[in-house]
Length: 462
Image 1: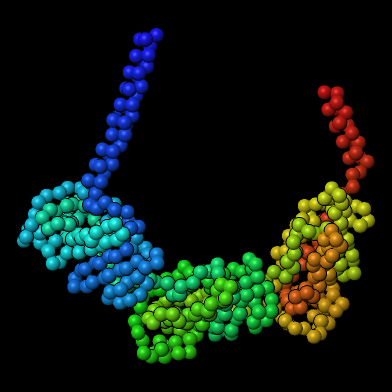
Image 2: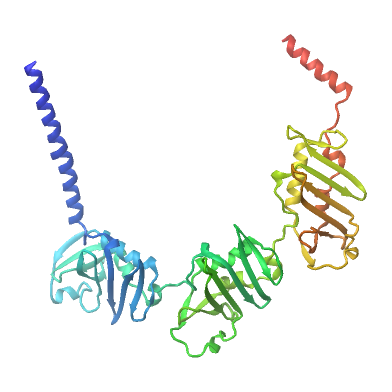
């Protein structure tokens, strides 16, 4: 028993030694080795002040309220991406090889006056500096020094991160805003002035007419402002906006954000070749964008309005009336979710589903008259065709009127709730008014019943 206890104590002691000395000690040594192999040891989020000097230029950056700003040579917002590259390079670059050098010898490695000098400091990080010199003749690395007595060879990515122009460092957004906070906005372009209002997850067009908006084209305007980037800065503090076509801009966008609908705005000139000028109301500089940037702003009324004629919640459809050329068909769902014709015949469920989908996907090709006074001239009073869809409360969730054909390719139509008279493709007519025989299940003949009975008996015999 005593020997067992002694062995157990030895085993515990050995396990403790392995854990604390070998495992934990090994981890600590590995961590110390990793730290010793780096140029600097700090957390990149702790830095709030950076100065980069090169070729007589000085770029100074300060972090205020979690946002980086340029304070030299101009005062403006900085682009977070290149600043993060600087911080990543300083905090992660590893030493490849070191050797002693000083005085004039430093210049032979590009570490004299021609070097890029970087100074940085932050919370818990005293001011430190590093010089970045020439690339190594072999290996594609670079020479650096942080004490003027030792040259260190490191990966060249650190020089790429620092060696940038003013435009590289500066913020390149045309306007600053939070897309998800925009409640409404206006757009003026050569085709008119449009006002959009957020309605849940959708957009409504309220000017020049009141109607549903085309979410895709409306969101494209905000997406371009959010994710698009300027190509150049034309002037820092322009005195004459007319020189840039901005005294009477071709495109003007005003955003109203948050509960208080705070206003912000940006203007763009007409395109000259592939270039247009722009200006944010909140900042003094004039910038340049290309034709691709301006493209979403150039849309017409047709582009900004919803083209779907017969939108409704397809899952609510319980009864459908189809009237075309005086022929009426009424379909209704039974308790088993099967569709039946009012005469009792069973409908093909997938065909009715296709019909509902075709109605939902029916698109206007042209908006003919937003405020029609005479529906007769379009063949809509009385209509040539009509679709009515009801829910389980027997409420109409869609009424679609179909009029005469405009020409060989289009028919007139109207959803009375939306008022506007539109046209849709003639090819879509058969999709919303299919033939009865295509919708109804064919009744089984006596011969087919006997065949089914025979197959059942053969299966039973087996």
